[in-house]
Amino acid sequence: MLLKVEDLRAYYNKSHIIQGVSFEVAKGEIIGILGRNGMGKSTLMRSILDLTPPRTTGSVKFDGVEISSLKAHKIAGLGLSYVPQGRHIFPRLTVLENLSIPVTKGKVHGEDLDEVFGYFPVLKERLKQLGGTLSGGQQQMLAIGRAIMSKPKLIIFDEPTEGLQPSIVQQVRETIKRFRDRGITALIADQNLENALDLCDRVYVLEKGVIKYTEQRENLSLEMLCTYLGVVKKQKG
Image (cartoon, rainbow, N blue to C red; front, top):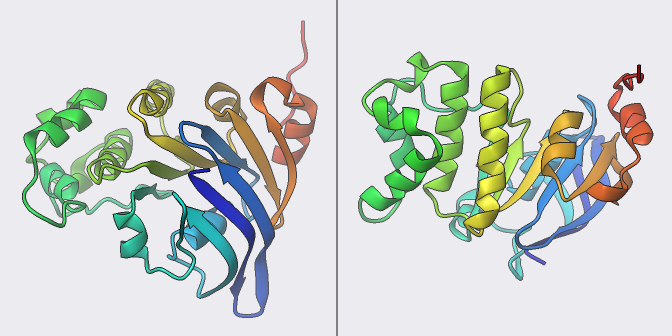
């Protein structure tokens, strides 16, 4: 397994947010962690990456290495990238400067930039433009492009299509699918049912910090997913 999480627990002060979560991600899979707002998805993702919360227990192994005691920059150096909810690009840096941030040694290589532009050609046209002046969709492209620049084995996405117009949503979905051909695995925290059905090989449903349901995409119960995600199932006819 590329990523193996066992009995992960996360706390904010006395609040027990993640309550013994275990799951696995194999190389080449696209895995969804689904749940409504406030169920702990973002906390789970950030706990894996040692970003927050301040206190966690359990085991997280990435590519055979125990990373639960490592700092975030060390985890990133092993090949695990993150596209946070809300994008969090640097608004006062140019597109090129944002893309250069993950490159900690040596210089930015043209072939690495070309890979990003292969996914998102519009970024090439805006290399000197400040990140804060991009549209929301373009900022999400930049956030994903920045993650690619670190040459990751696995990218964690937190709500990757939230707030995007439909054409950009589809572009982001297709990009994530293409990652599989490049040998990049994806873990997606989401509440979007359509994303799960279109993208994910397997899903885990998180409710109040606990995994309540898991299944392969072809065997998913749409009725159960709608219940957990608070989605009204469309009636036929």
